[in-house]
Length: 72
Image 1 (cartoon, helix red, strand yellow):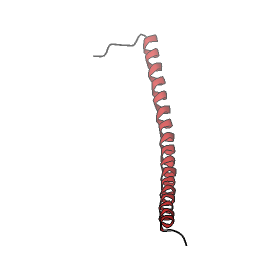
Image 2 (cartoon, helix red, strand yellow; image 1 turned 135 degrees about the vertical axis):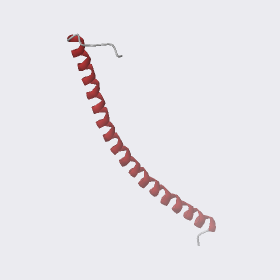
Image 3 (cartoon, helix red, strand yellow; image 1 turned 60 degrees about the vertical axis):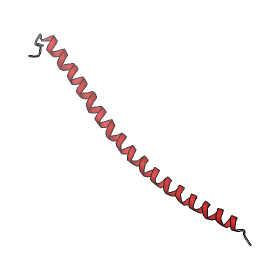
Image 4 (cartoon, one colour; image 1 turned 45 degrees about the vertical axis):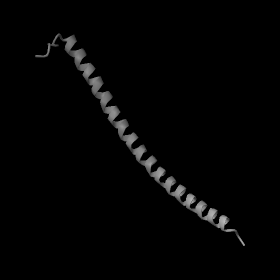
């Protein structure tokens, strides 16, 4: 016959295992969400870099054509 302490420990261990499984599922979902966010951030970073390059090219063109004026 198993002792009451052993039975109690088995119940606690079972609860711990169940909670760890739920935690793992939540972490998998979190990782998927973070992966999607990272993909979107890469797109934003690309657009920001394109705009920065465009701005640099416009400034170069304005300086080269002597069309750059002080802001009013």
